Amino acid sequence: MSHDAHAADAHGGHGADFAPHVLPISTYFLTWVALIVLTVITVAASYFNFGTWNVVIALVIATTKATVVAAIFMHLRYDLKFHAIIFSFSLIFLGVFIAFTMFDTETRGRTDATEKDRPVSVVTPFAGGKEERDLKERLEAKEKKPGAPEAAPAPEHK
Image (spheres, helix red, strand yellow):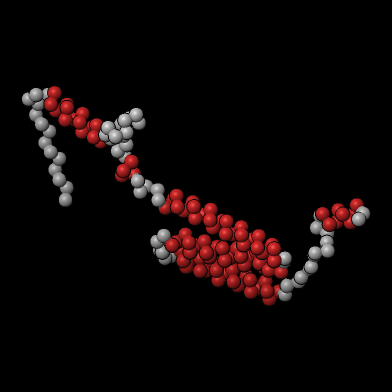
């Protein structure tokens, strides 16, 4: 192989496995229509509250649009099936990574009520929490002041 032929193959030349294909303009028009419809569905879905399914629905619509673009505009539909498999696995791994991220973000704040009363000392974690220490300090302060008027209890709110 000459130097020129090797350079042509390395920089976009036509190798043995290159098979050009020309798509009719109707395919591109139908692809455009499909993307417009999916965009309308995206906008329509944004007006509804599906709760925790909001992210899942948005990702399904976005993945569908990305798949249409990859299949038609990137010619993945007409390329080697190996490339389609690689693309599919990349979507699967992306889904796995997003799922693990969602496990973290969806459970934040659930332990705040428990963790606010952390141990006073890490050396003695079962000696009591900060709330218990503060209560003991207030009671001890009351006991040290004999004859001091007690504070009126806070009114209850209903």
